[in-house]
Image (cartoon, rainbow, N blue to C red; front, side):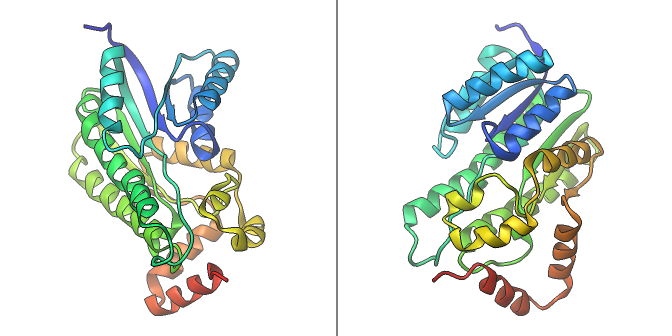
Length: 263
């Protein structure tokens, strides 16, 4: 039996973007880290950087979380190392831009696997460990795209709507426990998301509204520790979400289709 090592935060998608910034924000608070992403090189660099600058323990697991059995491998790694987790941040995810019928089906299903199934599995598999902590936190990363249907981002926005709905339900189920559950829904962030999604047409507009990953991460971590149910960084994004709740769905979808339209 491995020696139990306490006070660790597990962050997925930690090698870049918001995930990397949240890992650093936690390290500044002297919280030990378990960092997961696909790139061993980027994780290794971040591990060294955080250890040298913040003096906390950091372990890394390079793994493709879109693979079906990846969450079980994460659990086995945590248990075999004897890590006790009190924070789980499900940040890993990506989007694909284009008309549903024209995008590769396998790629879209892989996105569903990562954005929804992996997140759900990690919550389920790690919840028993989280429940043993005096105070524990789950932060699931959604998007402002969760609040409306988005033509040409149809599957992505649907997966993020799932994350939002699932997180709110799980929060209610755990309200009398020591585990607080929050959902982070950022808008455009300067992370390279648009490039991976193929959103070239959105790049110029995004530059006007992009928030920086460090700014979003700090809001996210503060909101998580404040036990907020939904964390929406940025005044413009808050207004956008509010508008999506009160305006007719057809109108919102038409606006979104104009913003994200393909050639």
